Length: 101
Image (tube, rainbow, N blue to C red; front, side, top):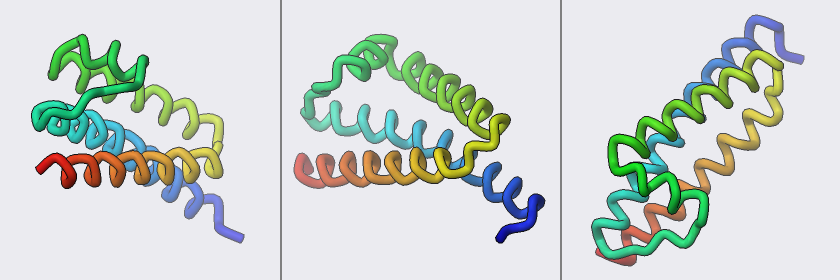
C-alpha cells in the first residue's frame, strides 16, 4: 500500500505525463500530415481545422483541464489508464510517420 504522499506525487506525475503526451500527439499528427497522411478521426479533424497553434493550444488546454479534474477527484487508476492509452496513440503515430518516411 502506497502512502498518501506517494500517491499524490504519482498522480501529479501522471497528470503532467497526460498533458505532455497530448501535446506530443498533436505534434506527431501535424508531422504525419506534412508527410502526406490523412486524419480519419472526425473529432481530431475538427481540432486540426484550428490551425497549428490553435490545435496545439486546444489540446494543451483540454488535456490540462481533464488532468486537473482527474487529479482533484483522485482517480489514480483512470490516470494510469489514459496515460497508457496515450502512449499507445503516440507509438501508433510514430509507426505511421516511419511508414511515410
